[in-house]
Each structure stands twice: as C-alpha cells, then as structure tokens.
Length: 189
Image 1: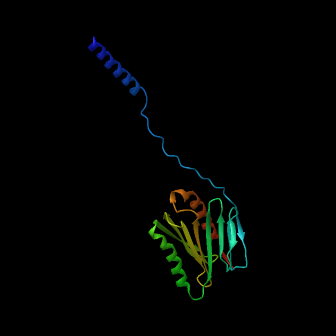
Image 2 (image 1 turned 45 degrees about the horizontal axis):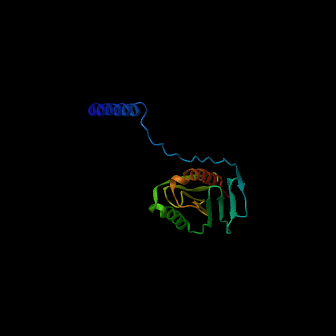
C-alpha cells in the first residue's frame, strides 16, 4: 500500500509540475527603460552689442556678457553653458589657431573620438572648425571662427554635471545645433 501511495504521489507531482511549467511562456526580465527628453525648439534672435561681431542665439537661452566681448549662453533647464571667447588678431593667428586646437585635443584622454568639420562662410568672411567630442569628455562640442586678419572667436559647451555621455546626449545634441547656428550667423562688424 505504501508503494502505491508513493507512486501516486510521484505521478501527481510530475503532472502538477508539467502543467505549471508547460502551459505558459518563459518569464523574461523587463528591458531597461530610458528617459525620453524632448526639448522645445526655440526661435533664434540676433544678439547685438558694442563688440565687433553679432550672432543669433536660441531665445530659450540666456546671454550674459563677461566683459571684453566674451559671453556665456546659459541653458538653465539643461544645466549647460556655451562659453564664447573673443580675441583680436594681431599678427598672431597661428598661435590663436594652435591654442584653439590644443583646447579641443586636451579632451582626447576621456574622448572616444573627435570629429572636426571645417566651416566656411565666404560671404561673411567667417572661417573655422566645429569639433564634436564623443565619450565622457568635459565638453561635447567646441568651435572656432575667424576672418584670419582681425577677429578670432572660440566657443565651447560645458555641463554642470559629471560627464556621462549617455546621460547628456539629448541635451548635447540640442545645444550642438544651437552652436552650429551661432557659427552660421556670425557677422563681423
């Protein structure tokens, strides 16, 4: 009798086990979710001052003068700033170009790659380079523009957070477009 009881228990356990494991799909963990960040597209408006250049900026940003024709363009919601530094050219164009390139390549330690794109606006005599820095570098984009004889302007983007490319990528992409627009709208006075 004990043997029949044990056999029935074993058959019952196998039947219950078979029913509970074979009648539904395999359980898989949920994939990780990512925060979607959409930023409002702002209109561009011109910024004029007593400085020897003008540019257009995103109206959602705040332009602040830092003296000597240097400016910051702040994006408070993204915790980011574009720093603009102006220097007159006084037979020192090679040094200014070297310093601008050196600033970009200081980030090579943390960067995955650096993609430099030449910029030419012959109508307004604006020539330069736009550099995109991939990876966890302190700045994701930099540029310089010049007319080669009188004016030299550099711009770089920084975030007020530890550099983590995956986290700042949506904001960085948004601000890169603003930086490109800024370069395209520079007019020397």
